[in-house]
Image (cartoon, rainbow, N blue to C red; front, side, top):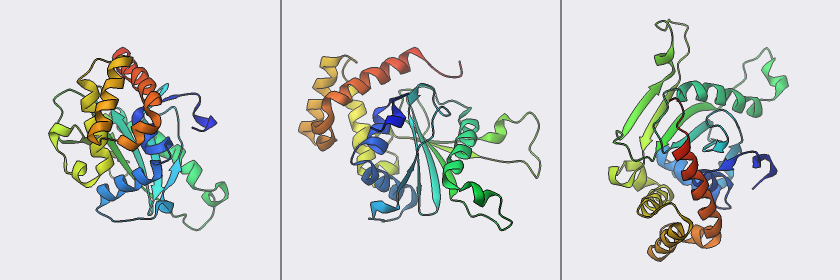
Length: 235
């Protein structure tokens, strides 16, 4: 992992889809699943690093540019926070600072920017719907007018028992969901997590990834589940 990430601890989701050597391949698969495309060239993926907006101290979000779009993705295992649209608004502003050159912002001709899209993957244990839309305007003090901004975040339940269509379209996301299920069958302790990892390797669930990074995954999960248990934002 890069030195720019030393300030935050990464979740397993971030490692799998942003930091790992297979991350661009995984992001491309996820992009294709979200847009019903069949891109094969990982070169269309450009990672965008933004910190301290969606989550504090624990990195559970990623963003990347592809095919004229910039996608902001986060994962929630606790209650989905209604302030996510506000955070995404602040997040994408920082992303555009990286994507648009300073000189270009002040040109008299219009600067074209990648279309923003916002997704949150819900992977918690509450009875959450298959999909839900969060809107920035729900937080407005007054009813939005014609010149008001709007931002929508699509929340997708990726728990395997919900069987959202995206899990069929994106194999790596399906395996990630199954792996989380397997971990939850055990206690969040080092030996139990190692047992879950070994079971998944035998069953072909994230097997290549887990063979390479089993010990790192164990440490990430211990930190992640401890963090989720200690802090629930917005309460």
